Length: 343
Image (cartoon, rainbow, N blue to C red):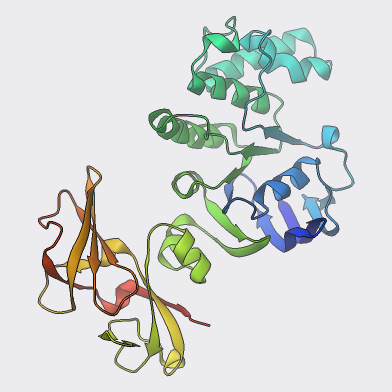
């Protein structure tokens, strides 16, 4: 549906986007994920028509989107602040864009009533924004964005103003809403959990470049490079040299790693997710428990192993049967790790 080809954008000496290319499919929930300053909001503003790239192309259904002024694009942007009019009722806020386009009053009423039902705000149409909760204001902003029936809905950090519980509820609501209305959603976020729970596919950006585009599960389990492995979730990253028998790490020994004949003799980084690390087995490495953090359903255990520059992290279900200061063995299966280029 949307094709972005070799898009670059500079602001003075800062290169916000550097030859970015990606495609967004019809009807999918697509996330742009990355740290502050990675270029994701600049890319969103280019799609919305508020910025113009220095080079590259953007097409919508094969037609040049960059040639269309912002107010004529079949694209809507929901701002991080929601930007609701405080003096207008919920219904008036939602109807505002349709009124500006001189849509007949009867059709406006029908479309506003329909979208109020869709976002779960039936009966609140006469309230003002200050009479609503944070989650309800977010729903109004969403209703105002989708009532115009755009081809593409852009969301800039849409849940950042909500508390944790409401945010979790709205993540489910956004996903339901996107499937129900059938509009293609593009969300910008720096929150990994938000991107993983919402998106069909995620583009990870860093320093203006796309590092990896993938569905959440392969993105998590098979990161393309060190940046993605370190940025997406927690990871144990261990540097060494690949041998026939495993990863040789100075002052530590031979560690289990995936079989990779092509990498033998080369420097590499082994990435092992904490939930893949086992505690208390018969083999593996011996270390000292430095920290135990209980999160309710899981516990994160940090184990300092001599020769490693940072503790190994292990995630176990429920409460862990270890305390700080315990000596314990840690190990993992070679198939549970990912070898990344160490250069």
